[in-house]
Image 1 (spheres, rainbow, N blue to C red):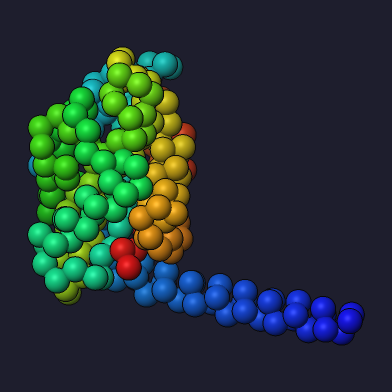
Image 2 (image 1 turned 60 degrees about the vertical axis):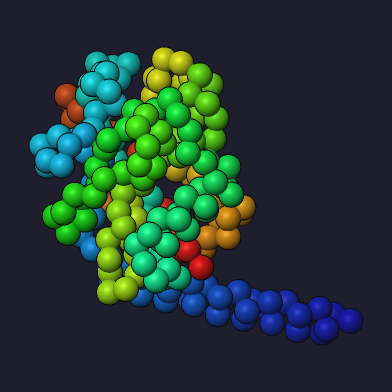
Length: 218
């Protein structure tokens, strides 16, 4: 009986090791072929217009910059329109459908070019609750056509309801990416380093850790 249990344990460890190597290989394949990703969300299609939380300083008086913290790669769609529809469907299934009550008109940057946000409707973002309640919300940008695949980047954050005060970047990113995997069937590939933490005397990125969650639409 002991030998049988040991054999099962050995096989489980081998399977886990192979799965881990496969996951790492997929992360390497996709991450090495990503476009150059801009580190922040922009208010305009201008590199000098980094979004700074509605112009409100953080509690310590410093400017709060809004980092990119989500990357979604779509290798399943055959067109930009289809990829946009898949993205909206995925966020909706995850519990973060488009909701009114959020500022809009932002941009993301890939390979030096600016991409407008999705959802495209005015005053709309992906969110899990109405704006009058504390909520996690995100704006996605793209898609970048990467040799027939589609790359989306996004900025996810948690805010207090009604007053729109900042709560967290990290908490929102982790919750949103987790539900995209659990409820919408996306594949989590790993944490992609963007090195976009800012902590100076005048500017900061809150609790952001410098990584974007790298996900794939299957």
